Length: 62
Image (cartoon, rainbow, N blue to C red; front, top):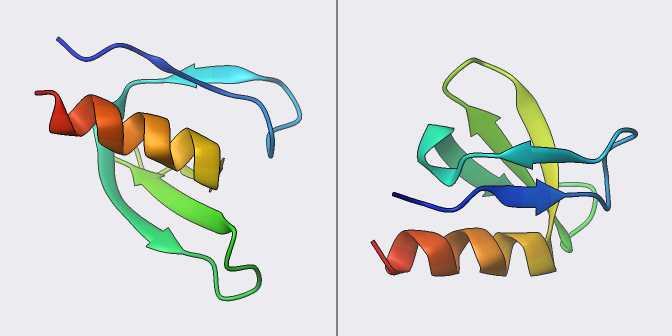
């Protein structure tokens, strides 16, 4: 089971996400240091490079 990832840099209310619930991640066209994750629920969340590294590290450990 994947650990939850704590998002805090780009969200108003810090939140936890489940990496297994991410449909895809793409780089922002406005800022190369920001990534956009689309959740299976349809929700879009901004992810920092550090958070992305944590997410991909979690996914790679699967």
